[in-house]
Image 1 (spheres, rainbow, N blue to C red):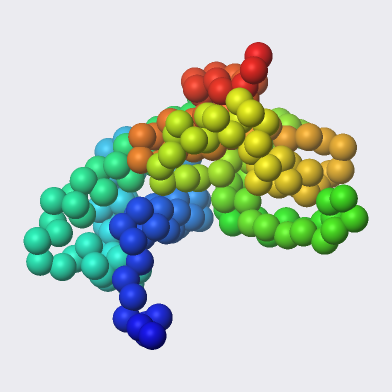
Image 2: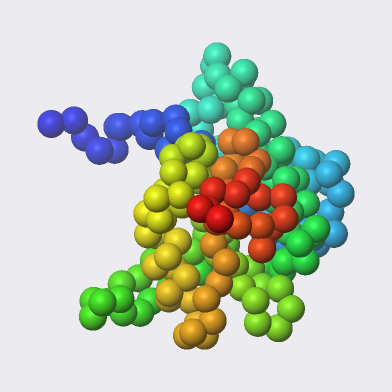
Length: 192
């Protein structure tokens, strides 16, 4: 049997994990909401040097420079798109990778919400960051099969205060939601 240590993560999984880390690190900086586009791009360039060495070394291999540059361009575009969406819709980041625990149908469940946002005094949103799969995410919402988002919404306190939910597709920098109540620029995938 091949050793797990020697296996290399598939590119989409690697790119998804790396982009998640970029966003987690970006949102942990205090000044990110006030950044201009050029500052976001410079921050990603600065952060990429260390992050790729630690978590994405295969992108540093000889011959992978075009893939690395294309990936970083997509991350820059996605970061600016998401920050712009947060700014224009008055959202503040509460937490990234928020642990959520509780019961659903009598069963204990737990998970991690990629991005939890708050607007005003009591309006919340949960955004699930996905590297790709916009068509699939739209279909999940349209068919009311976006179970991960629904479970997270159920688990987010306070009970009875149902948050908005959405997918943010990192590869394209697009938000997909059931409606435009939380993000007026979102691609609406709900049934109306």
